[in-house]
Image (cartoon, rainbow, N blue to C red; front, top):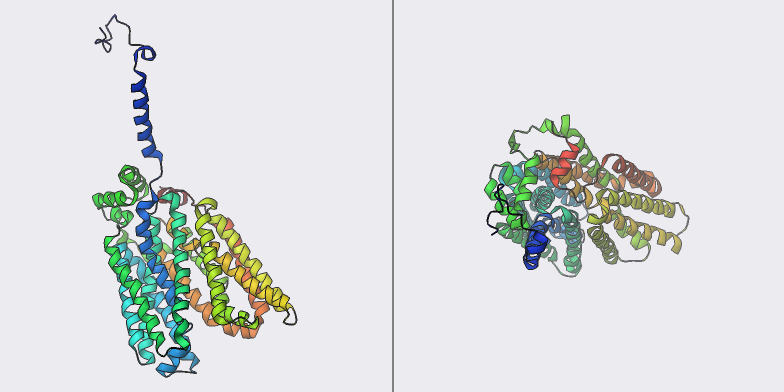
Length: 489
């Protein structure tokens, strides 16, 4: 009777759905439709991508560990290797690692684009294993310097690749949270170096154990990367579309592959990244984002964070607190700030955290300047000094520490992302080295009050710079950010 419903010549009236349709069928069809829509609009599960991110953050752990590994053992190292009392040699043991990091950071972009993110991780682990082994076995200053330089090259390659990788494999809604993992891993590395180094004054040759221990996470990184996903962005740019889809399925789940590939196609057009000239980073349409990234890293270092870390033991000793306990307090403040950043990064956003962070650091420097200007050494002065220092470390870890390394891969266009990140990180290492080299001479000639005033001024300049130049990237896909910063011609 109702077979001819679709025939326009039929004299029969159409089925009135409200009267004749089965209500159970309507509910079932609605549920199926809703499930289909939910799969398209819901966020992918973070549980799929987090193991890959955790493996990548081993680089940050190693970064923190090697930055702190010689602090406590340096006296024992200099005695055992025969350069005790030679301040130049002791300075070289510390700074040679920074020199190696500068070289490694310059090469990191070409390595990451040339062999892929996973192999870049394995290549950065190799010199860290070899360098740590040489440092642990050496019997002279030259061997120590060679080992520290090799470790530095690995540390130079690793952090830019980590920032790239974490940014490229993370779902947009947790990308900031994952970026905060890097800062937390760095803090844990610093704290780990502190605890491993504690027996060094009472146990002969313990400093060698400190270096051997660092080879373990480096080896785990190299092996675990075999099982991690490659960056789909890198695969897509190489024209390996099927592999990019397979990696997205590992990271996001099958229902999100199509939409992720569609997003990727908006900005990534498979350009040949190797054809990019270095000069493109310094002028033209890419100059703005490279300038923002380089300036953020420069201001991060000019804020005086490394000087504060260096001087913390002296300030705490004047308050009657041992250097070990001082390092623990600073480590706790650093870790607490990193956890706050982890919680707030995807809620408040990168720009807000940066502005509040640099503002808090400026306030902390004001407390230090006030303490330096007060006469006497009463408890009030000590509370201002110690409180200002811990507040500085805490507020640094909330924004100025983790955000630049996360923000740069977000705002850098896909075509230049790896190489521009390498350039910006090399700026970081140059300013890191200069501040470390000049801090003590400047402190001697200018005094704490004026020097900390300069650091505070740079923090305030950073607030103004961020307000005027940094865009918010919270919750946006990398393609949306790229299109917003660089409108397609």
